[in-house]
Image 1 (cartoon, rainbow, N blue to C red):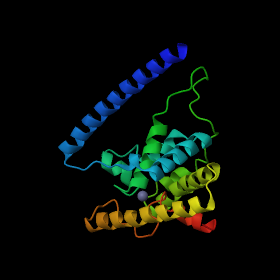
Image 2: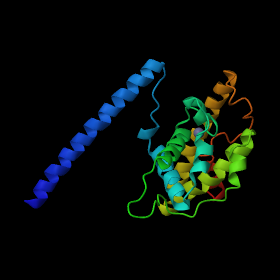
Image 3: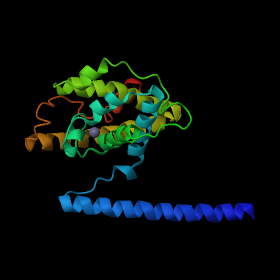
Image 4: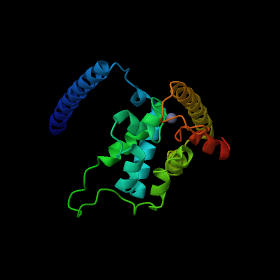
Length: 218
Ligand SMILES: [Zn+2]
């Protein structure tokens, strides 16, 4: 009987939660339609979710400091679209997943009864801040990649992927990298000021995880 009540409560909660999610989606969609843009759908993709959790987990495990997160997701930049562009390729789904993980972490709550603790690790070397704030795109993006790419590799190891799964994953990352390059070149052709100096391969650090897999022999 108790289990039955629990199940009823759980399904009611699930239903309510779904309604809330749907309501959230509708208003977000209306907002986007008003802005005349298309919705991005990274969140439905398994690889994007993998990258999201890898980054979120890495941020918590290393206890990355807020000023470092702000330097990456553009806390000091006013226009919302430009915030993404400091370190990521706008509209690239894997970049979007990475960006959202940083954003989620930045909005994390404090743990209860812990004297304001909100994360696990000791933090990373603050020297990275200078590089993350660099005007040179390559310096900036590779500094961010130095954090993100080991987190992705860590999760690949942690989830004990088989050699076949690793090879398949590398192929998916390479596909994303190719699409990311296409987005980047489209942004450059549109003379988007943020991207004009991104004249190097490796625009997308999440996509570049493919290289790390390659080095590991997959
Ligand atoms: Zn990307």
